Length: 282
Image (tube, rainbow, N blue to C red):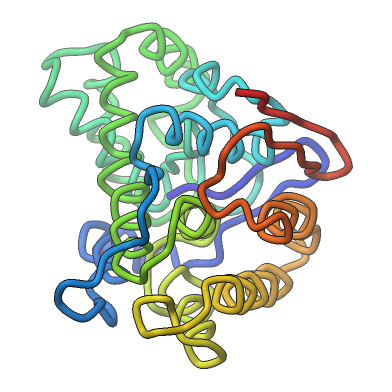
């Protein structure tokens, strides 16, 4: 599973790798099942984050925090051990060899293209799952990952797993909570960094904490009030670990959009992450 990353500001997802390795698929749906909106309640009118252009904006926003770049498509070949006891972190949302989602990704890739360059590493990925070991992987795996990243089938596999585990659950839950594109992005950014799940510092727990402070729009609450409560809960979760102590992706990115009442996340967008300035003009 992904952990946000940034040169000089490495961050790690707060989750138990062993538990994630044991049941990655079930955790992916926990947050969506929790406290679904009443029947007939949908997000307010507006283009959702699942609109292709809005989704690209979301990917650029996340990449600015994790890769110091808006070019998220350049990250398919990223692979590195960032020293967080979760093995390799790789790809567009940081699939990890120690937490199960890298294994899921390579298995999915192999189902789409049997005998691909990464297929030979499946036994090793199964063995290292739940640990930070590189056994059976190493520099050869790194080279082959970079080679596979040039394959459009592998790129599609990464997109598929991003959507299945992170993007779709986050957006579906946000829509059920009556949130527009900005709130949908706040959910997605949180699930990418903290992981799906229900413990206090995973996405489901952050949402639960927020709902104790404010009602969602689907519950009749004010969108600004609820999103402020969610971002407060997100910051509190981030600060439980030193690597998350820089909360600028909330303070000087998402709060900026919220203060401007840009609920539909419409360009032009201007923000800062870790002191670096970014903009999306259209």
